[in-house]
Image (tube, rainbow, N blue to C red; front, side, top):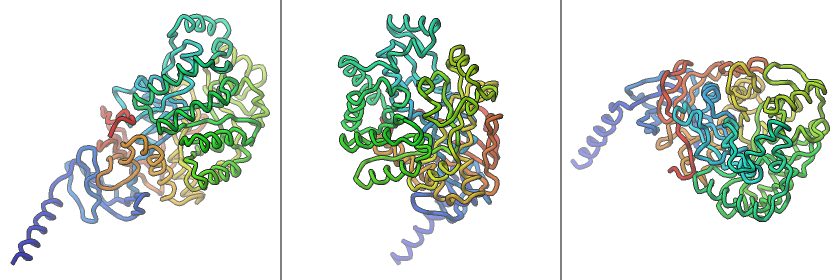
Length: 503
């Protein structure tokens, strides 16, 4: 009798659970979860911002999304973007990205990051604490929260340097930031600022070291690594770049990480390694085998993008990149440069962005193939559709369409792992919120990307970057549909600022 009663109660509970409507249900999709290896037809039930069920049995919801013939995947996590703008978030959403993070350059103060979209974010956003922003504040008296903010003098020295920018240009006016070594007093002040940023919830330390190679000596660099080890946060480093293929910058970062115990993430591996991409990957793999906490990333493009005033273009960049003026284009017009136009733009439009074409496809493919390498976009700030930028807003759909479906460089599950689980695992030890991201399982955050594996493709080009990717069916951020049937849901801003202090 007792057994019959137990079975009856179990049946009643199961029937009631299946009949209870969820806020949102995704039906009939090919659910793929890189952590568990699930790859089968399932139905996903969502309440609030949480995945409540991944079921073989159909579910019912207040809103139902039919994903027949579609892949239902964890939302893509971009560790490396510089575009916390309305346009940047819009085009990244159409690339399947649900979390876009500024970790290479970072921000300072961290809570001032993404001022343009902080009240109306389409997708999740966050930043590391930016070491160069701190250095600029300390050495030049200029406050610059992030790449989209307006520089502002914060000291008397800053007002003088602001005037010098107008007269001499930023390379001269900001030389103390990018070319002058730190004093002991500077180091103490900058350590304090780093600690303040970490206390405020920064997702690690952003260290675009290559842009300040002349200024940051071994003593200063070691201080950063020691602090990162002590605070148990990751350094996201753009290593010093020498002549095409020179591994010295990578070896410097790996040696410091091994010596101090710091966690390090090497940004855009092929763009630093160039002709020695295989060697860099070998050395990172060997360091991991020795116990170094090191990871890396790749963007699926064979060009770089940066302001023409960047310090790298003040060095012998033609030797560094093994290119010349005709390999550099003015992003806003597509004009290929000459010596004369290059120098004119550096003097007259120092914040203008150039695209420099210096990678080979085989280098990029090699990094994409390597196990454990995350996919990123390195999207520069999209401020105005009248000004072209590099088309990195198609990075994730480019991987799915070109490197998975068309070329078979990696399989679909591996690609999804590189876009979801690997980035989440890189961050979860210092930011617990990421333990619930990058997975499609009950109890996880309902950041979900639904796409057609047969048609998904990037459409952004260097001539016309402002094009949405094709093949995206739906995107949910924190349980809220932001895209449905390939169309933006109006007046919907469910994104959140992500910090290490969140749970």
